[in-house]
Length: 327
Image (cartoon, rainbow, N blue to C red; front, top):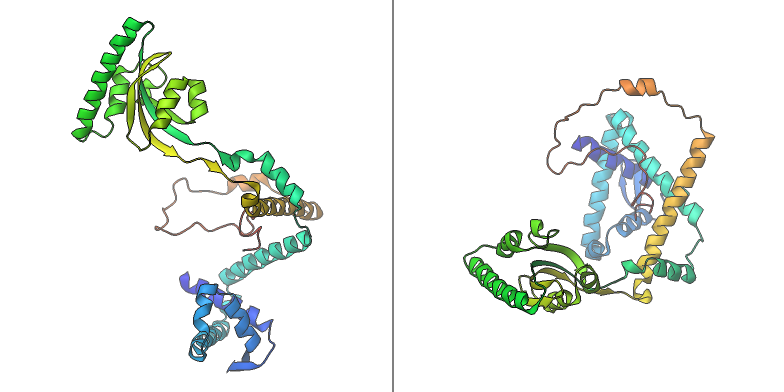
């Protein structure tokens, strides 16, 4: 399979080269010519980092040798009839489809630049993607208390629990706080989850619980830091910081390029869908559900070797590279 794929790529490169023969000849392989323009085009297809290596005559010879080797292999593949192989034809068909998608969408979107005003509207409509408050995942232990006497007792209990938690942690019990929270916290919603309050911003935590808890939680700096006993309207609480994310505040100018790219991809996707709809309407497409239902599909296929992807369909909706023309 790998050999066939290699020959396919070689044949595809050969076909592309034959279609663009201009400029001085730098090499001949049998009757085929490799021109300076072709060499330059192939060099330009490589990344700038790799391309910088080929700035001397010796390096250019090295690159040219790769083209010569490909030409030799392509000619041999054709001599052996591999260009007529069904699997090679199928791969050629896929390559042709992808080239068609790129060509068609490039033509349909040519000259349709995205206006600055549209970029600003997108930014405002999706402001939550660019401006986000600091968020924290915290755990807490709640000991309810109503009056001063109950709060004093709860503070003593909380201090003892905190001492127990720290002693457990010194012995290597990583989740000591969560274990104690499950047994001792009276918050019926979070206690079964070890006191986990999930990821919340400071305002969200204050609204969901209380301001005192939010203030204490967001004063903590490092994962594992703890605060308490903290007196709150609900009673007395202990708080542990699990992780904190920094605030995001990307202005329009900073976000403009990424917005343009995102809008271009979405526009390309819409154009593709409209184009495919018209193609389908203009063609006679019929499906036999009776015959389709007879097709047997194995319930438990043999697992693929590690790292091997499943074979894609001929013309998948171009959600990324295909819609963007492979760029």
